[in-house]
Structures are given as C-alpha cells and as structure tokens.
Image (tube, rainbow, N blue to C red; front, top):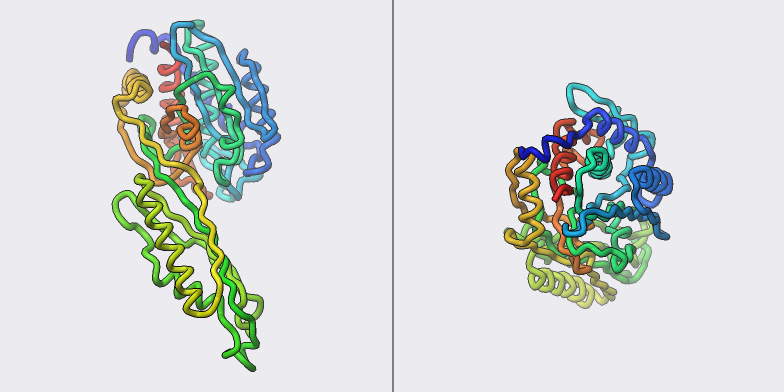
Length: 368
C-alpha cells in the first residue's frame, strides 16, 4: 500500500455502525422515502450538494481537484422482501440479520462504503477527485430508478456501481442483454365435464409451446427461461386464457434476437394448430455492455484495488444492474464486487473485513 493510502484510514467501527443503521431503515422496492431522506442528509453532512429527484433517487456532488477526472459512485437503496424490521447482528466478524429477514447488504453495504470513503478522505484533507454519488431506488424490480434518472445532469463520463456478489477486487466489466417475452394465449372456455370437446385449453396450448422451446443454458453466454404461467378460473372449466412470461439473455444481442424469434414462433404455431390465438410482446429489459480491460476506467479501478493490497480480477455476469443503464446512456461503467453472500435470502451476510476492504478501495479510487 502506498504512503498516501496509509495516511487515510477507514474507521471500521464507524463503517459498521453506518451500515447497521442503514440496514434498520425499511426500504423495500417502492418504499424508499425514509432511506432516501436518510442518505441525503448524510451526504449533506459530508458537504455534498444534494438533490433528490421525483422518484427518490439521491444525487450528491463533491468538487475536487480540477485536474482529476470526475467519477460517479453508485449503489441502490432498495432491498428485496422480507426486508422490513431488519435487525443486524455482528458475531465473529460477520454481520447477519436475525434470520427472519434479509440483511440488505445488497445494496446497503455499497451505500455504507461510499459514505465511509467520502468521510475518511474529507477528514484527512487530501485532495480528491470530483465525485458524483448516485443512490438509486427500485433497482431490484427492473432498474426503474436508474432508468428514471436524468443522466444529462451528470458531468462524469465514467462510473463504478457497487452492486455485485464476489469478493472485493472483482470487477464486472461485461453483462448481457436481457429481453422479456409476455404472451397471452386465448382459447375457448367450456365445461370440462359436460362439453370439453367444444373448448380450447389455453393452458394446453401454452404447454405445447413451451415444450417446443429451447430453454435453459443454450451456450456459454446465452440462457432462456419461462418463469411464470398464470391462467384458468376453476377446476371444471376448460381455461380460455393463460399468460406466459419468459426471458432470454446473452452477451451477444444477435443471439437474444434469434431466441426471441424462436420463442414467439413456438407460441404462435402452437396457438394456430389448436385454433387459439397468441398475443405476444417482446421488450428489452436492459442492453449488454462490455468494457475492455484496457479502458481507462478499468485501469483506474484496478490500480486502486492493487494499492489496497488486493489483486483485481475480471468477470462477466449473467445478471443486470444499474451499470447496464449507465452504459446504455453513454457513461462507461463497471460493477464492483461488494463481498456480500447469500443475497435475496434470510441467510444473507457480509464479513466486516470485506466491507472494510470495499471502503479502502474507494478511498484509493478517490485520491488521484
């Protein structure tokens, strides 16, 4: 570790207290008003110029050394359910909930690390690069906060999102395109015991279509899934209507397009064969991105990681994050491993050592 990082110490006790305090604030997706107000005030206390948009995204700005490139640091404020009444507990160096809720380290560990890094650097008084902090809402339900964000107000051309599983030091520089398919099969209702032959079962049509689809892992970078089927009104009624929801993902957008056409064709052909009707819509959830390893952002982040004594590793993910939206908007963005484990479950936990490493990486990143 270089001498300049040695002089800027992360206060681990303060960091843990910040995280636990944030974790106790209920913030399930769509109900982030309280946490939004909390982090906005914390940013103001750190000297940031803070704005909150109509969706409760919080943007904080700190000026820095004029010659240093500005950067965005981002994490999301919402958590999945069960996420109300979280009671964090520290034992043997690991923070967990009481087992009845998620912990919310996804993504309040990222939020806490950003706040601690800013506080540590500001307290030290060393020059820092200009930073824009973006705390988004409703990430867990489709990146809605990031999509609602007016990125034209941001002056940074690069960003680091703190919202990935994996040890601190893991850089996610590739993510897939994710497309969604929503289909409604319309058949004909009939009494299942009196005149079933006069009906057309929408569920049977959907089943035939799904059976004809290529699903699961299609190749090393492409997956497809049918995740929801809803329909029918009663046991003794031939179902007239059923809805089917599915997806395809790939790091190659052309492969997503091929898979979507295949899934649409399977639905339409099964419906036509049975005399039913298929109403199908395809939409893009988020676009793919790939940031080269020699990109200045990756090099900057990798250097910061090395200065804390860690070795950076590069990974591609099969999931999405706000990084997908920032990249789509023209802001070169990577995701950073936060160190949490078993997210979206009541066993979610994070080691204090990982949380501290994360804050140290951010300190190294902020000091040009």
